[in-house]
Length: 511
Image (tube, rainbow, N blue to C red; front, side, top):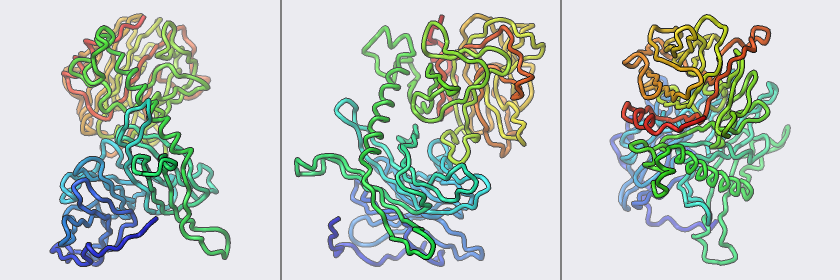
């Protein structure tokens, strides 16, 4: 690292805003130079109020005259900020908060106002349950990555501690995470047992003039807190992440291939090869906001997400769907899959589902269940003292051959015709955390959105796919009935009626 003089940068700043703080200190995260030349640094401010809460904000220099303290700030109790410029004039700030979760904020006006990024990265990373929250700064940078076969993509890289599931392990290993602000993948550990602050440095091959050195380089810096009893810390440790950077590029290549696969789900894109991914399904951009995709990758009781994010856990009898390789068939009551949200634990990559989501799947039911009451076969559940009632979903009523709406933990009177042995497209939509809708073949079940105010502060536990039943093995009936679920798509945004209709018009024909 070659240090240069800072003669051209003023050391003083004056702002009215400064008087409302007892003190300001550097946030620990590195500063950035924005595309318009502005220098921005994350800082912590301690309020003058009695409780003296800490907040995170930015200090920036535009030109060479005066430093400006942003008017906007994080919620109270959020400190250790790191900041990046996600795209031109768009800042993102990651903070460590008193509740143990990492809150991420977005700003398009240099911090004059901040909006919590609840639909993407905010509250994804947290602490181990029943563990005291330790706030440490995170590595948080942007990078433009790709190779000859993969178009360059602007992504973010994060280093954060991940704690052992063993009760006696109180230290965390730093993990490298990759995200494009939609998908998130854990690349793996980059340190030993060190629960410490970290930073990332990235140098692109294009920035080097020496031909022999023309390769990307990613370096992790982290604080090694403890070496042993009565032994001083060695301070900062640096690690060159050569293999991790290679893995990052492999993941990016996979994302691109999966995007191309998903775009082919619409028949119109097959008929017209020149149709782009963005409009292959007419008015629906089928990959915009697409976070997870379950297709035919099933093995060892795990239904794997094609985007390498969160996998679903399979219970009961399950096999790859016949005829194609894009789905799973569940046989017997209790056979199904759980796709975790809150149930994922410390780090919840699908935390956005508590606010907005769209779940789309192609479903067919084969045979007649002996169960007299409607049986839930797809939906979303909430945490409620381990009872996990169905917040929103569908049950099958064999007597009337109808799919019945489940809402707010109860079975409603609303239903829609459902023919066995026939493929149907199901979509479940949650908007603003309180308005829910379920569609079958483009038709909303019930005619209007369901009011889910009873959800209150209850968080989403998981999505269930396939026959929902008791977890007790002796109560599971292996009936001659099955449900086949194909091409499960999870989005971090709510679809509107027009998008649902357009998607239904392009429904994949499945034998």
